Image (cartoon, rainbow, N blue to C red; front, side):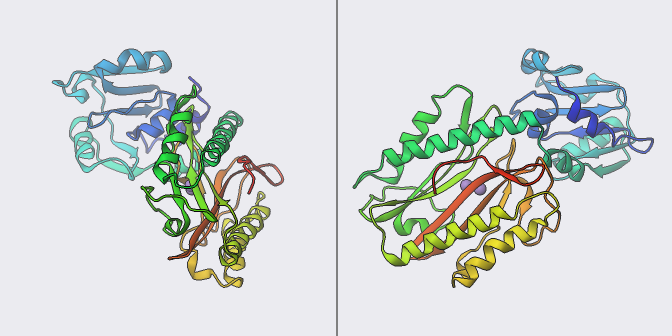
Length: 351
Ligand code: MN
Ligand code: MN
């Protein structure tokens, strides 16, 4: 178990804070390396000054022991997990974004807690900056996303359906060692179907001279990639080609702004201003991008309202898009790492 990140979190314990209670399985995985989906059962990590205590269903104890260095409280479905310890705490920090009211009440009742604070911002700040090891895994995840686009592009032919392409991509990617799942439902949309930013693939058949929008990613060793490419099948009409050129230029301009110290909102602005100049401002209805890590949507938020600055080690997407109903939807999305003095684009498929 690597304690680097956990020690960063532990700094928030003090004479006023007795413990940190993590209940989000993603965060438990992030800080301990133990990955589990408990469904409705209790899975929680209690961090105190002198102990790490993991609460989990008894049937998962042996799996946890392989990666977790700390006290493990395995409980049966018929047992009250909290009663298996004699923990008493006054003040704890919890994930306000995740902990349910039911669990909060259980904590109060069983541990005697009188004061609750949020640990959400502190966790975001830690997860925001990726280590070299995390960046290496994210690069591999991004390379697999490129490969997935390649598989999809090769499978394109007149008359094929969106869902047939989705199945071809997923069949291939999920057979690769280390890829547990796609980052989200693979999106393949033809022609004007792509004009819905979150459209759903169906039985639409591919015609000549249409654009095909692929939006996909894989979860590799717990880390997500997320790429969008809009590919011409034949020669699209001039109006649609102009939309494509606008979205591409916006993507390139936004990426060029990235370096430590630059305001994140200025990156969004670079793309948005250009798209607006070209007359498509009202057709770009979403933020420019989002952070990427063990979650496919995490911090930082790449939007006009985020006035924080880029920092070395941040990893996020830049995804400019223009969607004109009944005509076409074009989005181009890359995964970007902030380096010491600039950026590195880790998705490589041509655009
Ligand atoms: Mn995407
Ligand atoms: Mn995305």
